[in-house]
Amino acid sequence: MTAPERAVARIDYGAVERNCRLILSQLDAGTALCAVVKADAYGHGAVPAAEAALRGGATWLAVATAREATELRDGGVSARILVMGALTPSELSEAVVADADVVAWTPELAAAARALEGARVHVKLDTGMGRLGTKDRDLARSLLSGGAVGLMTHFATADESGDALFSEQLERFTAFVEEIRPEHPGLVVHAANSAATLRDPAARFDMVRCGVAIYGLDPLQGDPAERGLEPALALESWVAALRDFEPGDGAGYGRTWRAERPTAVATVPVGYGDGWRRGLSNDCDVLIRGRRHPVVGTVSMDNITVEVGRDAGVEVGDTVTLIGRQGDERIGAEEVAARLDTINYEITCGLSPRVRRRPVR
Image (tube, rainbow, N blue to C red):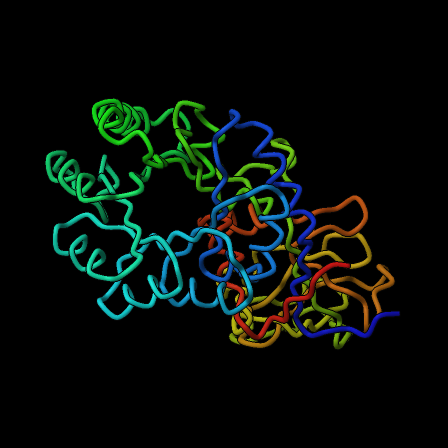
């Protein structure tokens, strides 16, 4: 029997590779896959996830910060990297030293980048996201004429089925692309995140930037299996203590739960210090011995308590699955996100460094 670990994320990098192959199989020939590995690959481990994505056919990687690009290079990753975020002058220099492409949307940003030897610039057009990028098409055209290698935008509502803004953004961006293509035939044009990639082939252009989908998470917050995606991450802990409760006995801070009948409660050493949010108090399940059991009481920094009853056969040392599968039962990041009124991205990104990442062999 494998010795238990207090909190471990088991990562199947083979699933990342297979998800990339699946996405590529749905793209037109010549459309590249850029695997987004920012935020430590959404909590999955940036370098091994990047390597898995490249094995699966991705030819680009995307991050948000210069430090993330440097970490990939230090990890031996040699593929093309795009740093998508806003950069200070020192971060801009770091990104270029790391041989990464950068993004500009003002004359000042473009000039600062081009002053650095070897800089490759992508111009960002804001078609409705309202964050970074320029809405001024004339300015965008001017920046492109300065030697840019890419043109991009980002969709605000691609993950909201039927929302009109997505179509409006796509129409605006497509019209601009058609205007500038004859002048810049070698430009790499890209817009689609995971949701847009799955939603509309017209959004794919020369390259798609997929993040959440390559980790087997559904960008529309549904069941990944319905899209053929394989979740790559399982979050596990173990039963560290087991005790009988009588009616009226309470568990956890504030005694927010009290036993209504004779029962048994397991203590599991994982909590909000590991990224298992306090908002899940009295409002989520875990899997033990292939069965669902409710978390009862307040989630603390280091522990949760789980009602297992006295006839489930649960023992100290049993594996507890918070995200993942046991037997026929499965708890996805999407289910956990729904309990918190958030998205699956935040669930995996929120796992703290205290949770060990272990590759599945």
